[in-house]
Every structure is written in structure tokens, then in C-alpha cells.
Image (cartoon, rainbow, N blue to C red; front, side, top):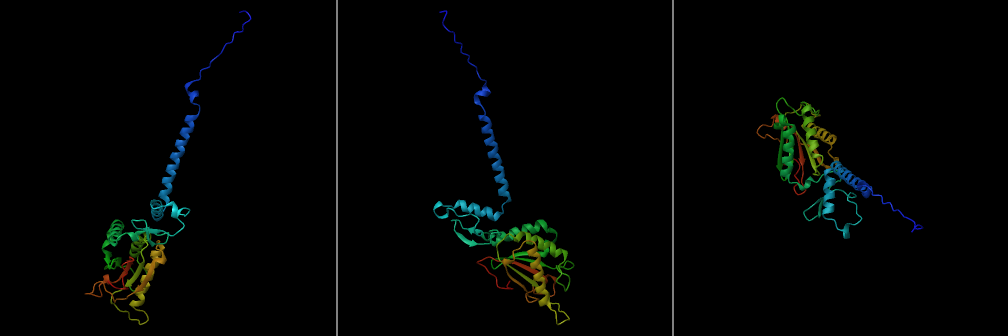
Length: 260
């Protein structure tokens, strides 16, 4: 017994924190990373234009690996889809898909914008539907003209209206026609008439709308009709006959030039 060795075994108990090691830190880091990725995704979605979001949504809603695998969602122009996911209208990528909206909905959208931003002069902006299209008319009022008398220079009033209209129609893919109209007052000069004046005013309106984002490729007609299509037929000299008409066309309803 005297030669027998005594072996002492020491058992060191680790604390509760040491038993878990750093695993909780890894889990927490994963959680924070996922949270950051989520907010980054939300921010990116907010920065993407509405038409691209619509295209992405339609792409994944109707995606099949057999027919669309390897195809980029953004490599083509924007498309408007029907309820079954079939493309029925292609529009430029930078434009929206408001062709899926009805004329009544576009009319209501424009009226709300006019009411909200141009409420003090809304009586000089007429929005109506004709032959399936939406027409916006900027009309003169006694003491509140859209252009200087006998000139194609727009007044601050006209510029203000054109900016609001431009901001609201620039994302719509509808073809656009712009028309100028005058009253029946005649010029003493034979070298310049209401035909030139109405045409020049329509061209000025076109330039202003393009400045506020209207795509020139959407324009189908910019023309002047002098006093041949009066708004107030009973009095062709009424100032309301001096006006600019901006027409949003819909594919199934193309209006004839100057027809109301």
C-alpha cells in the first residue's frame, strides 16, 4: 500500500456562458444581416420605377422554368399583361402601363391632380372623354389668357398648367396629340393668320410638355386648326375658343384630327 501511487483527478466546471461558446453571437449576426438585407430590399423597391416593379411582379407571377429560364426580366421593353399573363401591348421601358387603365380612370386621375394643384384655375382646364380618348383643354378666360394676345408666347398661367399636366402624363404610354385653336378675330396682315398662330401655340405646348418629361416618340400629331373647330359655336369670338387641346389616345379608340 505504501508503494501505491495516488492519482488526483481535477474536474474544472465551466460557467454557463462558456458551455455555449460564441454560438449566440453567430446567430445574432445572422439575424442582423438578414434584417439589413430586408431593409435594403425595401429601399431598392422604393427606388425602382413603377413600370419596372410591375414587370418584375408579372415576370415572377407567370414564370416557368421551361420557357423563361435564363431570360432577364429587364432585357426587353416594358410590357402590359392581361389576367392570364399574356402580353397584349409592348411600350417603351421608361413608360408606365396606364394603357391597362380605362379612359374614365385616367380622366379621374387627371381631375384629382388638377383639383389638388390647380384648384384656383380649374375652370380653365377642361377634361373630358371623346371617342374613347381623354382630352385636356387649356382655355382662355377674359383677363386670364394662355398666350399673349396675337402671340405664341405662353403666359405664366399656361406654363403652370402645362407643368402639372406634363408631370401627370409623362409616365403614361398613350399616344398624344396636341392641337392649337384660336377665335375668329382676323389679322390685318395677310402674311400671318390664325393658322400660323394656332400651329405655333401647339408647338410651344409640345416643347413645354417635353421639358416636363413627355416622350417625343409618343406624339402622333401637333397641329393648328385656327378657328375652324370652335368650342363655343354660338360665339366664335368667345375667348374660350382660344385653347390648347392635349389628347391622350387609346389603341382601340383613335380620334380623327380635329373631331370632337
